[in-house]
Image 1 (cartoon, rainbow, N blue to C red):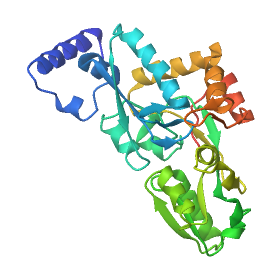
Image 2 (image 1 turned 180 degrees about the vertical axis):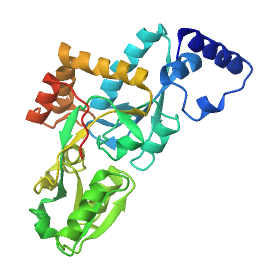
Image 3 (image 1 turned 120 degrees about the vertical axis):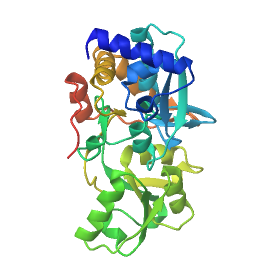
Image 4 (image 1 turned 30 degrees about the vertical axis):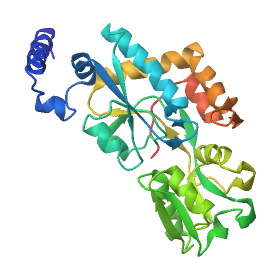
Length: 302
């Protein structure tokens, strides 16, 4: 778009907003994000309610590693748009609705625990990867479950709308485990199925399982077991076909990685006591993530 065309479009949009009419393109999330944010004076950031330590509720306040990363990105957007008073709207999402809400423009930055993979990139875009994880099992120490083979014929929970759900179903068929897979609407719901003995284990990204165990009523009751079925990157989601906004977000992530701010935030959430109980997850940065900090990329899992 030329500068003249962009200015004309902005004037038309501003006039429409003043008249109380929101164009269909803006309403459907097809307007460039920076233009939409500038015109509306607000940016919408999503969070998850139980994706410890990435994005979760401490009381009623969204906190976590991904929430902090997004907060920094929002500060960069404020500077870019010269809008220090930009309003930040916080929107709760689930595994099932996070992608549709990014696609339709309800959410501008999805700050949770979302795997960056090729299938999802047909619908949404991702910024620089900020964590690597694999599917393992959360179970009670008394369950006798040590690895995937021990699950044969048993009930296992996982969360609807996650890559783990698909990975588990495929592994079940390929290995003839005859599992009864119980879906939870979010990670806390899936963990509750195990806590209440309706399932023997919860299959999910190992780092989320560590976080859930640390914040359980009785952390000593739980253990994370099993070989990792796959390794996948986490990244922040944004709308597809919006290269200007992606560049702003990517540049902000790279700057954090180069300045040491990313590693400071990592230590805050993975190597220090975190709310609500002051538990230290004590998860050192993996070789894969350290490599990504040295050479930032947004490569998806297959």
